[in-house]
Picture: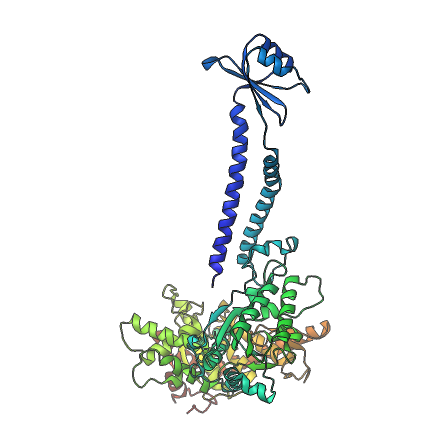
Length: 634
Ligand code: ADP
Ligand code: MG
Ligand code: ZN
């Protein structure tokens, strides 16, 4: 857009003005300074005496301030004096004439002086003030996130410069987004909902004719990286209409009223380009619920109000559709969600198994792969991964292939990059001592054996003790055979036991504890707490909601919704659940301690072992066959 141009013009203007003022100010002081060189002040009577003695050669009268500047002597011996004229001395000119003094009157242009004075005394401070304001504005915008305090410099008067209220929206022609529904894997329900918008944008008249009112706005909600931005672009691509993209945070300005101006500008542009899509990404930055708290943010509320009224006001016969995306729908202002605004809410969830495989396929098409690659394995080992994670896995695999000088991606590249995305790169610089390596081996084997012995646990697919950049010194990967969407209470308990397996092994074998279990402890506690407060899975409280997830899509714990006394009891209950898992793990490992030794030693030697190798040793009947092993998964 012409934003840069505008900015450059504005700052040019500023520089020219400053230079001009500086020039005038300097020339003014220089002017007086020139005459002031070695000027001697004398009294008026002294001056008259000097005239009478024929010493004075030349007199300059400045009628502006009644000063007389006069010179005596010639050449080298010339001296300059100054004095103030006696008011109303009408005889002076005769006396000067009498003594042949060269007299000259200097009538200053007082009107010009006044302007200069005004400019210097008012203009300069104003300019400096504006300059500082401008600079502050830029700095703060850079330094601040979306939620800073708003500051009001005299009603935002600085916004006059033009171009400041511009929306900054990125405008893309529909065909040029380069994305259609074909590029979005899975998300069939979302696509279906959006299909109607596509057909409306392609053909608004058809809808107008029958009197149907198409949705003005749709809100895409879901966790980060699930393809919300991608879907919005795809709608524009499908319909072939202009796509205005702007981030919600771009509206939140330092100056009250400017965000609102941007909103106005955006909708003005949009109505010129209709049919089109206005896409506001991460709308929670502006759309946060207005509250009555004292620390409310004027600027954001004004911007939100403007957005609400624009959405009510625009003529949607022309075919403008506002799409917005957020991963914090619970924070949005209710007014945004009422019919006529974002009346359609489209969930964009994390992909399921089939979805993950489809996303992998789409991205795999862009890279050269060996034949017979099994993307299903990758999909199965990445539950909970978002589309962005999966795209990243494919890319990491391609990078790895290049690093090894191959021109095709292999299955191994893919599996290795799954580890990289889950746990970080291998960290070669971390060298564990022999003892530490032993502890980590037992720790990971502990997890694996407890997992194998629990009915509700997913089979182990890999155990490794290679340190990773994420800080993990090793990990045990479990891969679900098929996806399931419900977790039973027993499965949750088993999971806690598996998480406790690492620490339990350390205690059992070394009679010692290490810090290596901190991540396990965190996860186990979180799960136990959710069982008690959200899933109603504790005997003690039963089906009572005691906490609310703080943010559905961003994870991050829950907020308790109970009394203080209950909170204490919850803590006790959580502790009991985790301890129960800990005891289960200890018991399981005690019963299988020979297998624990054997597998841990094997792991220490090989560093990475597959699930099959693990199960082979575990189920081999050598007199120490595991107690009650789970039937090996097919
Ligand atoms: P969000 O806006 O939900 O945070 P994005 O739309 O920015 O996520 O997705 C990031 C990237 O992840 C996309 O550019 C795309 O490469 C990939 N991706 C995410 N979801 C999908 C999907 N369903 N199909 C194909 N690629 C996807
Ligand atoms: Mg996005
Ligand atoms: Zn562990």
